[in-house]
Figure 1 (cartoon, one colour):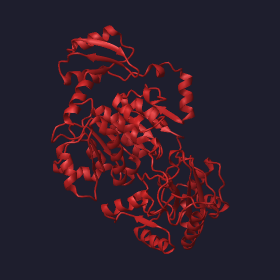
Figure 2 (figure 1 turned 30 degrees about the vertical axis):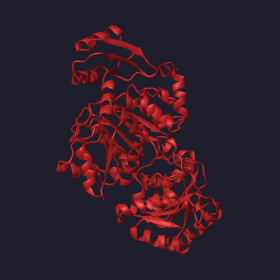
Figure 3 (figure 1 turned 180 degrees about the vertical axis):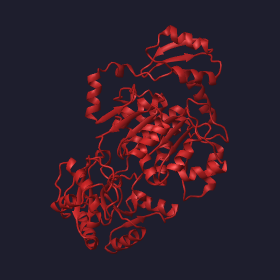
Length: 535
């Protein structure tokens, strides 16, 4: 495998991409100055390339690449009028900022990917890029720093994994003891493991290896992978810091950094670790930051470490939930919630939609265990997840849930981020969260990949500080707001979440009278194939 990667590296290290504005004479002169003897210019579907027959040295070549190389858009993209580009962005709710943002692509052949990447995409049966991929790939492939703001289920993982693979194969092969070329930081082990699966699925064809580093699992195997050398490390910040402090690995070769769900990492208190990690990475790295929200803390992190970055927003600039999700809010008293949950599960079950799954979010670990036991007493197949579960227990719970052996998952917010399971049709907020951002990420487990989903929320007087933000959320989607919720919002004002972006899904108040689906004896998931935007 290593020999194959070296051969692939040698072929790719002979390619430079120049700005179309450069004349052939200027390109030739520049190449001669750095020792490229023979130059052939060829126009290929994705770019203009200069293939060098002989190069003085890789370091010299990289130095020139840093100073003169830019990604050149495909002729089809260049020939599109400004009106056509703007129309595409408006249709897909793409907002951009920054200088020199390239036009979005509209199909995979325009993405400037090598054949081995294109073949992997096409073999998987995918037809069109998602909006975050359409605009994100041209930026990432140009080597520029990027901030991407998009909701869960937007396809952002592939938006950074595929450019990472291409970036890696333009570098010298790593050796034993080398640190990674690409580093992906994620807030939770569940998200890290899902990113690893995507990196494995699409990295195999390019002989790009990866490992996943997270807490709660034995360190020995993780350390062994790091010592042997892998091209991509996907890690939670705390465990990576442990290995860096012990000298198990280093970041001297890291030139491609991804911060996935940056807002969540900051919410979880990882900012000191993130800054410590970034300080150990060379300053000429490429950095891609992804977030569902854009609070001042995330913006400050980008300003400190990304320099002149380009930014993409998918959807409204306001805080938004997926519009494929119907949101139903029930204003009630705390002591009523358990009976309401049982009634709701019965209504969902009576609709008989085989293969659908439900997540119930609860505030504390003790409540998770109690509610799971109560649900099981009624005959519902339920499993639970919270921070006290071992990694083996968590993996087993997710396996049962994904396979449909248990159609209900009761969880704390540990599962709110990074949980990517097909067939989740219902999200129930038994305990309403402390912020609008957490609410958005919770309900984002359903309604993925253009499918429809439904979220329910029990909203009690103790949640009244969140009422105004929630009303704004529901108003944007033009759905009914219960008089009780509106009254609570008028009395209490807003600011519970401290972050007012107002583009959410719909909602209605009152009781949960709606035909649902939820099999009591669920035979398995009804969706086994992968969908492109799931990544």
